Image (tube, rainbow, N blue to C red; front, side):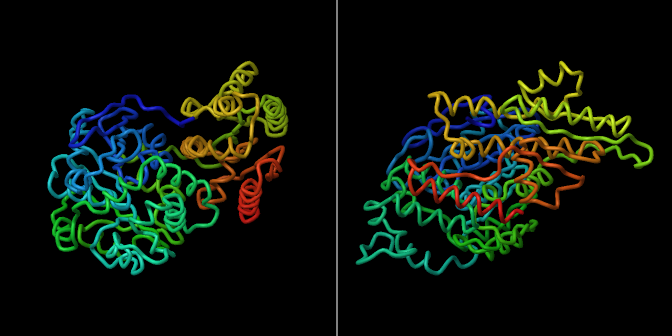
Length: 465
């Protein structure tokens, strides 16, 4: 289940087929998350879409060869200028005159072409892990690309970046490549998602993308010098696919701002989504309305209470806790961030539901969809809820900043606990987390993979502690 479904979607014709697009949200600003290499589809931006779409229009598209778009095998169909033309066609079809462009990796070439050659259509440009030939690449990868079509006696490491090996064992290449894309520990879900998206296409399509005409170093730098819109470059310091130096050079050439993410790899938007989302919002969205701050001695004590919608037993416990807190702290105000069916129980008790609750993605509906066959594997259901949990944490974070809260309470608020551990600088109030269980146990019938996954998730929780 997705955190947010598109409000509109469609196809645009292009040479050799059609390209699919989706539009979310409304407003007078548009953020266009551009496609990257056809090895993944537009769902690669799933941790950004729901958050940004609460503040503006958000546009995504599947590049040729990926997702719901067609899969031509002519290399010309995947040239940088052909893909830029597809982006313009999607903007026209969706009624988008101008947009801020957000690109990842090879999508930087599309963004650079549009920002330099179609400035009237581009309000700003964000380049994440730009894979542009403005500085030297990873030596082993560049060597493999120079002999991309040559057979090898063996294929180890970056030698797997080879047309013959892709035809032989595409899955193994995908597992190798995305393992390099996510050097951060505990990235099993991100790697698994990307391998799955890569298997949706074919070796012949991916080979065609590598043989397509593309920007060279001199042209890339010339285009960068022509960019006049505001530019933000986000680059992981531990990027093992496109070196951090490329981001430094691109920021200098465009006169843009560089955000270096220490410890992050090639795709920080997927592995460090909270930090990237906040950076995108600060750069692309209008400033938030001034917050009202009162001196501590002149305001009532306030609590923001997050109560999970999965099961009503703990919700009754939460109401009892709230009553006791009010008894001990006269005048205490409690705002509840909650979803149906918990909100019905709270409203029946006269509790105050925070208005941001309406933005929460429905967790209980996701669990219901996962258990439709009357069998629920909780760990897998939790892993597949990743975009819902991230979207709901972003709702919590904004709600927590709208008032002076003295205490945050989360009952089974796993997303709050996880992302606060990942981003401890965001904790601005005392925080209590309650849960009925901690940790994961493998299911014997699911074999070695389940044992490895549960061990990895448990290790991450121990590291947080």
